Length: 535
Image 1: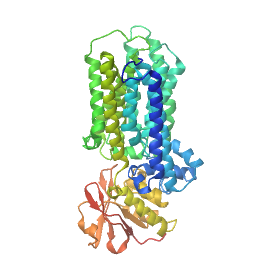
Image 2: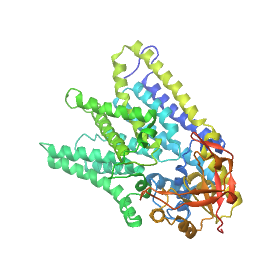
Image 3: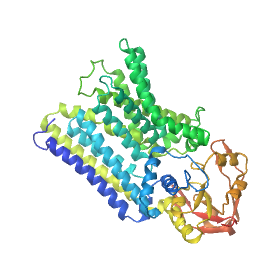
Image 4: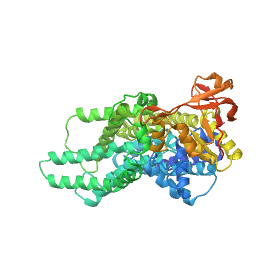
């Protein structure tokens, strides 16, 4: 729809504005990441991101799939790690430099995703509507997803899947190669985040279900569905077989610890970490499916219309609702905000259709005025959101305390010193020391067995652990003040729902103590104990 009249731009200007917006987003993110002090950078990077950095570094240096350099692990989302491994093999630098470079790399991946999404939307809707969707993406997904986690590669995978379907007319005639590629793209989506398995489940369920109830061309439909399944299997099955052969289970250790499937747990994690944006995306997915069910039956949309878009959005909405249902039923631990990034992405993309309809129903003058008021509001709110995200206080981030402690370890312990810690990502990566993960997400089943058998102290001795690290003491003013003699801590096996025997840590063995800081609402300190084992 070409714009005319006051307050409107032509199609070419919308295209230029879209690309300028994407380039500006990459430049702003890169400028912050490259120039900000490391303490500021760490406020936007979750501790778990450093697990990827360290494992990729270890693989590139020939140590294999290990976080601590001692224990093999598969506690990661595979596609993002597969991208990082060759990156770490080619690019060399200290941990701080590599961390900055990786985040800039994610900015580039997200910019590519924005280009792909915009290419999808302008096929079906006016560039005015697509530009609003792009604004929402850049302000409310782009910066937040460039955090070292797998979100960027997941968004890119979903964007590529949407564009492939739009350009190859997935609802059109049979093409075996196209169906195979569709399945392969679905496989990459799952390898980007394993809990996105609901996307191919919905796609394959719809395809096989439609084939079985079809009155004509049933065999052709079944063959097309089988081709999609084969493409998916070609990508996913090697990973599943590797896990089963090498680690004894198809599910990685991180997933096994977090999920109680098939036993329901009804955890409140899903609601406590969903956030306003995730909740809005979830509500939009539910509303979209409801609209698809209750709207009047219409003839199939003609080629070039929004038929494919609506089908794709319905698939994504179903996958989101299934994902959320699985989360509230089976995810018992460690569910964070980035798990819901696809919900926000769905809302950002889906808003294009009702917006385009609304603009087309208004007069040129009224739509132009309303449009730019809406754009201005998005820009103001979005800039405020980005500023808050990039301007978090280092004094309120335990990641900063972990980084300071890591620098102490790097400067005051030998290269063979072995540490053990829960939430060990930031400390383990920046300390450049072996740090055994005590919550288990990047450890393995041997550690879980030691917890269940109440042999943690023996496990630590066998592994040669010299230092125990703890970053959070909730409601323990005696620890925070240092007015204690001994502190007993046990660690929980999420795999077996059991606790280890206590490890006794004494005040006289403190090797490092940070100044007080806040971990959420709790004042705490970061402590390293020397438990008396030689390096």
